[in-house]
Length: 362
Ligand code: SF4
Image (cartoon, rainbow, N blue to C red; front, side, top):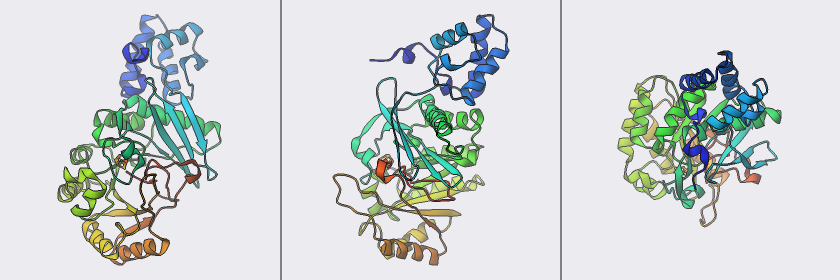
């Protein structure tokens, strides 16, 4: 069943900020309200934490009710929130059609990274990922993406966390197969909510047309690429989309992204014992990414039900990292975060390293 808001009400959080403002201005004009009402509502939308229009306390009651009639509430209901001993916090949000999606807040020193979802489920079927195994449900709208930020920000403020410093699209879903919503959401987060473009990272398994579209964008959004293997044969066993966009094509797209200027690339590499952690693969990986001004994030594998794989042992992980470094590659090794609350979408969400932008990527 489709909820009423999907049929009749406008979702302001799905609109570019100037369009949301113009929509609100028209709404108040038809109700003979002074123009400052628009400014009041816009502030609530992007700066405030009100979960509904009824909480916008400097608006008259009748105006709050009229806003409720006309627009989708600017907050997703929280189905559940779990907080890890290390401060990592996972929100489960309920969408209007009862789909559930997750976002994760990951504190690290004075930084607070928010990992958000771009789809309910995922169709990419990466063999190491719990979300991939669970399958695809539907695309999120731009409003459902930006509402995760707005809701997580409100919760973080109420719990005394620092401001959200970074956003990573590393939750459920492959963002670059939902560009219709993700590209507008980037603009809303950047221009509406004021999150700097360089503080927003889109993580992809390597959707070439999406990477090329991001290369064309004037904003310097960051890109993280889930590599996980340095050659076609091995990579296609981990990431089926490698068959559609094989490594040479992916690397060509990344060259275009880098040529577009100032756009740093991060390569994510999940370390699975005896699968992709052999020393010769480190050398192959170094040759593959050496041409880029990039960082390789090595991520200990987070076991998922139904797979016997385990994470590379610390000595194997260290040896792999050392070989990369010897070959001139910038490397970081991530610390797992939030494991006691299962804050990992397969491998996605819960790892972060102090001083780095990103937790774990798709
Ligand atoms: S790793 Fe990312 S792209 Fe792959 S199945 Fe999981 S959520 Fe989808």
